[in-house]
Image (cartoon, rainbow, N blue to C red; front, side, top):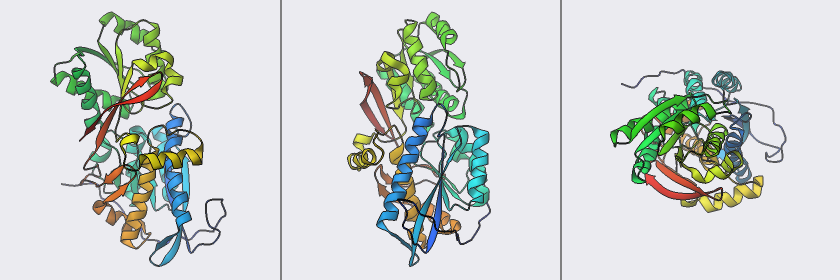
Length: 380
């Protein structure tokens, strides 16, 4: 039975018109779209990438012109920083509710998306995460909760299956004790054991750690074929680098939090010893990937990190729901979300009853001279 009742608020957003380079000067309705990610801290580069993707969509929609219910609508982009901190995430979520946003793109991580989701559920505001992969995020059965990426229940086993195919017989696991890192590591461990990979140890660190030598020295004595790390690139990069410095022969396996184009800055030459996954289709395999990449780089003068295409599509999915509802009221937008069938940059998006993708994909990458190279795409 589905649980997670929420309050539905019906209201008309009437706010003063303000001027920006991207927003037309005159409009009948100014409608706020919320966005949240860690824009400061260790994973800021990934958070900023997601912000850029969503911002690009808002700018495009405003430039094209948007009519809802026969009225001209201009989108305002309310971007907030939760610093990838769960407590800050709930404070920011409440601020966006108080700001009367009609929907939220975010949060960036599972550890922030999960606690914030209760606040959006209580307010009846749609939340679409472009990066939260822990299955617990949608298992709460909130009717407001969606994501546009695959889950760790798919990503962890995909990494384990790849390891098995590559002849890995023994593995040591390390996670950063966050909802994301711990969940990914556990899903990897369960699958690894099921397919005959021996798990030698499972250690926990934290998402602020910079020195992994004690854990790695212990792991060196275990002599595993691979080290699986559940965490973000800000910690996964130094872990891989220090493993190389200590002379470990093990390959490093990691998830989407580590799988950024900026990993080489953090891991140095050890980057080429990393295999990582993304909980979505590879950019070069996306139907609109090439065109989006060109637009993104022209607008922001930097390469895409990981999930900009997903936050971009998330904005368009919200606007698609507005058009189908013929309304910008949060309750009307929410009512249209289950019937979403949107074809965007990342492909076709349809949701199951929990708000997960019906047809997700996992992309596996290696690195060559510090540059990501696609190894395989696994359709779920």
